[in-house]
Image (cartoon, rainbow, N blue to C red; front, side, top):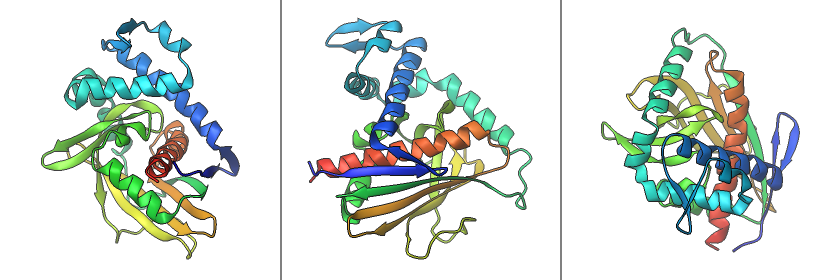
Amino acid sequence: MKDFKIEFVIDNYTYSQEMIEAFEFERNKHVLHEMIYLGAEITDNGNSLSYTDIDFLSKPDAARLNLEAKVKLGTDQLLELYKDDIIKTDKMWKAIIADYKESDPYQPCIAHMKVTGVTMDDLGEGLMLAMAGHDSSLAANPEHYGHVMTEKVPAGFEGMGMFGGPNLMRIMFAPDIKIPLDIPEDYLPFTIGYSQLGDGTDMHTLAAHYIKETDEGIEMLLTCCFPQGTPKELVDGHKIHLASEFLGLVKIAAEQL
């Protein structure tokens, strides 16, 4: 494994790797609590865990059991388990965009990531692993549940912004769309697109990540633009989600080297 150092700046506050991992610990326990509440059995070495047992897990065990449970259940069972939450979250998004106007300003969601010891090529390898449906995609963030085909269009099955439940979300890659953010010229586009719900409804949400190589490694601007009706808690929570996800991708990349 290649050694690296990583930190994030969100809303002018610096977050260390350990601080983001503290959020991940809580979200791993949240997902395990949620799965038990919804009727799934969570086991560790053949022993069934209760709802309150989850609160006694270590940080590594919470991450391990979250991943093991999702792999064991598989996407189809997870979709069945979360079917009501998916419906409720889709309903929330359709309410958010009901009054959308193209002239409305977006709510920006930005996390700046600085990595020492991992190159642009290294990170690309980690991202390719995740997008290929490898278990790494589940491990990259506590609230990643898998990939689903919706009317022959791939969709991510995940939570957004540590708010509400998970749902199906298509990421439609569109490198030519205009992103209403001021991005420094020395950053290159890494991925740009917009989001749809699983049924094809436009969420009027943009995602654009930018990267530049440095002498020490890389820096990235991880950005989304949310419509005006989006709860502030979701917008702010998604800054942490982005940091967690790309921390996960950096770890995946470093483990390959």
